[in-house]
Each structure stands twice: as C-alpha cells, then as structure tokens.
Length: 187
Image (cartoon, rainbow, N blue to C red; front, side, top):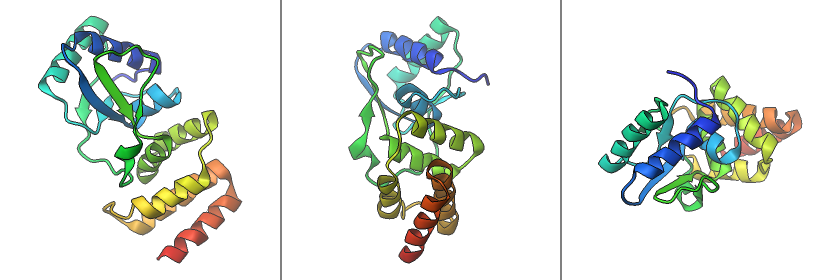
C-alpha cells in the first residue's frame, strides 16, 4: 500500500464529495485526521474512520479512486481507543470546499491521546508534528487522560507509561516527572 500525502488526501476527499448524491457525515481518525486538519506532513496509507461507512459513501469512495487514481482505503477502524467524551469536541474539516461530505476529526488533545495509547514510532512522530505546529496544553492532555481514558481496555500501567513518555518527548523531562507523580497519586 502506498503512502499518501496530505495533498493527495485532500484531493481524494474532494473527489468523494463530488460523487456523493446526498450529505454524508464521517469522523476521520488517525494519521489522516492529523494530516487533513492539524497539518501533519507524514504520509498515511489509509483513511480510518470512527463512523460506519454507508453504501453511498462506499460507492463515492470507489468512484473517487477511479477518478483520482488514488487507491485509498476508507474503512471503519475495528478498534480505536478515544477519550470518553471525544464526540462532544469534534472539529469539522474546513478549507477543502466540501459540500456533501461533512468530515470531522477529533480535537487535537483527543487525537493525541488516541495515538499515545498505540505509541508506535510513527504515532509519536505525528504527535510531535501536531504539537510543533499548534502546541498542546499539558494540563488538558493529562486531565483528559485521567478523566476520560479509564475505560480503555488493556494494561493501565502501560497506558500511563506511554503518556509519560509522550509528555517527555513533547514537554521535557521535568514535565514527564511531574506527570508521572500526578498519575501515581491516582492509583
């Protein structure tokens, strides 16, 4: 699967929009969300969504692939972990001139927390890129983790460690130590 640039993603979504006959709502997550709304330049291989891909949207995606020559999978993510109230904070993708495709992405702190839990190298690179372009608020990041991520299945200690490591990368060692102490008090 070939990696696609933010420009290619934009061109593809515009083609999807042209091929829709009626409005469709989609919540884009992952690397595509980071590229389309937060200016991350790291290429991605797909468009993961948190919403169901309707038959009409699937048809528009197929026509957009033929029109653009871009083989971009658009699929509902089988598994993704998001802050409990992330849907209340969704941001609409603006600036693409989309008329029928109502495309939303998680708010940046929510998207970063989704990527922190995975903590693959490319996820950490995207997180750093988002922070570099529009700095994250450390207090918001840690508070959402504490208040809205306890429902996430898996090793809670590993999740905490992933957040601390991300905080160290973004805000430095002192902030990471303070975050680790704060999270330790929650246990």
